[in-house]
Image (cartoon, rainbow, N blue to C red):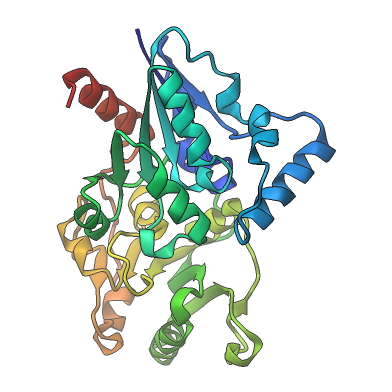
Length: 327
């Protein structure tokens, strides 16, 4: 019998993206919300500290932690097992251990990237993933799919009801993101452009050094929970997406715009080829001067007619079809 196990990396964002899987009831599918099983909070903190250091310095004796991994608590001895792992889990799971399991049992590994490869946070994660004996690889990034011969798929995203905590602001744009590869300068220029056009802006940039914090009205290094981000999105008419250099896949902002019916401004030219693209709702710019202030101010009844196309349930069905066909 074929069994499918999807083990979440455990972050709040990944749990939000995979939330729909809690309702996917099949006898041979199992969704594990955490990569680690450990009730002792002191041991758990020690484990997390070990792997936080391990990301920067490859530490020995990883085997002492394997018994706390969720995968260690799954009986792999009887069935044909498909283990589905997101790239984030490889800050914990080491490929040498995973490859040993594959040699011992009837195990197939399916990797899915929810981050662009160029933006992976650690060299350890990159090396770890490269050494894994994978059967299938999925990525949301179109260029990455061509570079590593992976299957291109949309990002996984589960819709949920988000309360509107305050009245939607007219002529307003919301941005939240990391200052990866020094994109703060571009974001500052966009801020100036929108402000000069009379647009209300709420910009939140994390990872900005003190010398680059030059705009008093911008919120720097103020970490928001994902719940807070969604609440803010509901309060603004338009979302701004700015890709980091080298990225060709969309960020969560695209999915949020579609699911919550918001306008989107993005510098991702590829978005024109994606489902739900509509020039009434999505403005794509190459140069900042191209951003159309009047387009932001123009009132539209926004409805992308979304029908759960990004749900991880569809991703699981795709995997089941793929493995049933034996390709």
